Length: 423
Image (tube, rainbow, N blue to C red; front, side, top):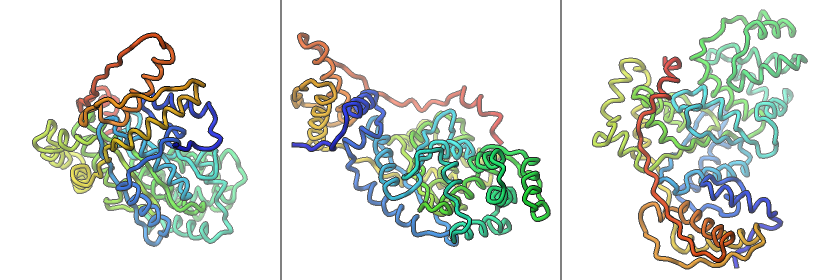
């Protein structure tokens, strides 16, 4: 008998089933079904331990890339890793690469990560909760302020220690809220910062010009990872889903994306204390997009293209392609015993959710390759069969499915919409 979680309400079961029907697992679904991928979970836990043991004097970030076919459970895995990170006290963010959050644009990815951030012990907006957690009388905060104020060493604009000073001493709620938004990646008016410095008598200690907008994203990321540590959390876990969308970018944008992936995985020239990243990508991406024998041949074309426009990114872009080609950890396909256990667990959940005794499904001879062997197909097939049996008990219906094949074609609309953002 498979034991289900105690006191799980019918509504939670229905939410889990609805998410599984659509192929997008939510928290209840992942909590109920679990996740058995030890080859990924073990190194992830090790990265969490290393991140928690770091301090600002030894800034190290680390990352992991995971590959799998469409519907093999990549998003399910990320949700499971999110649970593990929250249990260990980490701040955690999940970002789906999309038109709104293109991987090559650090500013947009960073802002999305902050907006989606979750904390293990709070439910409010991440940046507000972090601001409230800062305690100026603690050693962590003093170390954080000293680090932020040493702009000659940390490469930050003086805007960051200036706003930190204002936030600590000012009682202007609106200004402090604007500062929080600036830390989270938004713009801030220089006039407001200077007015805040005058309020606290620090206008002579901070004289600076407004930094270039293009210089701010890496500084925001650097400052924010230290801010999380100063607020008492062991680090920040950022989960990047659907990296394969990079294939829809232009050649130059793909090159910049590979360089950004290197940053998030801790392989670039800059490191960030306490930052842990995990990204997912389709298992044929490298062969189709990067390999010289593939469709796009990025291994041949990215480097010369970057040397024309962004020569400083060549090294990181090459490392990023290497990460995708050779350093991805593959998802394990489900064993038949695991599939049977999960389907039986789903049957019990379905019965409880709809107050209807779902019958056991016959173990048909499903193929051991192709889309029908993927966990998403098996789960959705079982749920759909019970739906049909429940709604049409007197009919014998047959469900058919087609395999989703990623095209990896470039998206001209995306390229056109982002043309103005390309330096």
